[in-house]
Image (cartoon, rainbow, N blue to C red; front, side):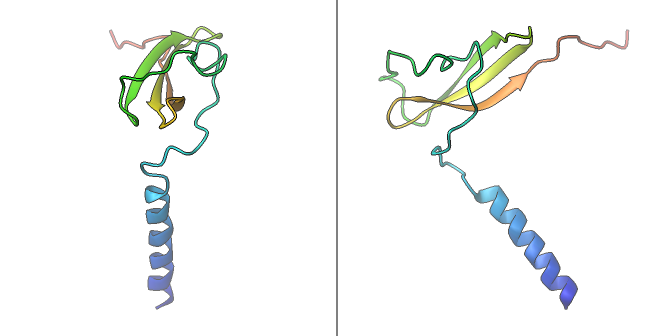
Length: 96
């Protein structure tokens, strides 16, 4: 009995973690780094033709020479949120 209650609690916590924040863009997102579109603040021109909630990528080389890709989401006030950031490896390891 105790085991099934414990498993139920673990499952509930895991499920809550998966569903919390889904579709909610009210968080601050990632902090901008040099090269980010929003590093010096929000862009002066507003993205008026893009629908709210749409996303787009931006690739650049950061201050340490890493290839970086950020995914931005357009908020209802037309500001940009950095939703994801990925670093590409500098060296490709080949087995050849």
